Image 1: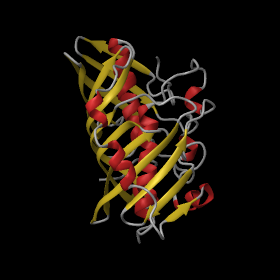
Image 2 (image 1 turned 120 degrees about the vertical axis):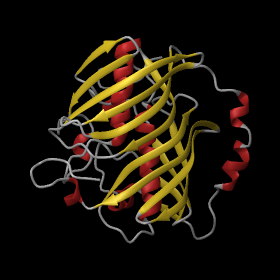
Image 3 (image 1 turned 180 degrees about the horizontal axis):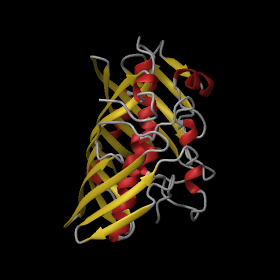
Image 4 (image 1 turned 90 degrees about the vertical axis):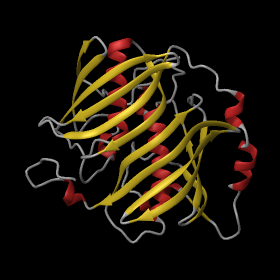
Length: 301
């Protein structure tokens, strides 16, 4: 089973023993980019993760992201910038352990990533991984007074636009606490352009969809205005593949909001099968003007 490519996430790669260096020129017309965001094209943090994955694949062949141990996004990349990925690859019994530093064309660090990848077909998830799923699903059933939000209302909350808006509806939401969001995966999405039918939905887009659900939950009760920026994640596990035709449900909890930053966690399901677990995701809201210094260069600390 191959994994679809949401965009050309690297342009070139140089491979040495145990390392790879890859370069990507961020283009405003890359697939998905015009929707992130229409007023200021920002390379999504999840696509930096995709760039790392494609760089690793250049070194060892096709891989899939199994566990994102940690990711920190330190500065945004705008259209016209270069992304340079330098990754160290260590073989382990259960896959590949990768540590990557990402930088812009000036050498400034833009992201740090630690992840585990698997090669070949995905191994079945241990049965113990599903323990307690029924109870967790029951705990997220709608309660009286919770909001149901349709796609038009989601578009009014998020700055994302087609094709980067990756939510279809919010089944129910308790602002400041929790929500259940729905994303229907279609084989007509840009990530399947030119790829073979039946490919696994990219982990980067699944995580982006979850992040958008978390952003809706936060922004429903937030007083901040600006662009919600994905800044960090810890211990995200991708347990089962998601395929075209699947309907993904994100169960999201807002764990903490402090000093203009929000922390969320949760799980994603297809039917009763859990497909991903997000232990922690962090986002901040930034005014668009803080992302550039007026000379077309990034400015975000």
